[in-house]
Length: 127
Image (cartoon, rainbow, N blue to C red):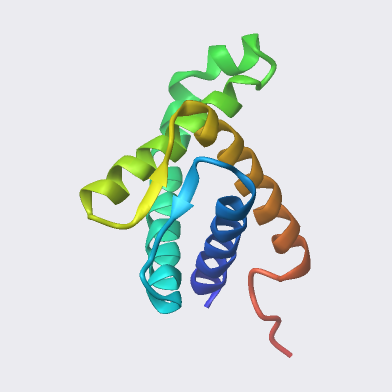
């Protein structure tokens, strides 16, 4: 259940990002197609972050220390671009128009995901 909640939160954050950041676009033919595309891209984004981000943090630990963590903004943008590349390979109607769109898109995604996560719990509490 927690996985589905996280997926929905990421998809909503991705949708907000497409509304706020120029250059990040999802263009489904119908509302259902757009929603399914957002869910698929959210899944890709989650897998990319879960697999690559820990490896990048370990390998690039020195860069994180030297830049006081600011390199994380660049890493997030590059992971967002990788998500776009994978989505294009799967023929999903999701596009990111370059590094700066990915940079701002990753920031908006992080902030919106965090805001939603504060309100919506990861797990339902058992009573």
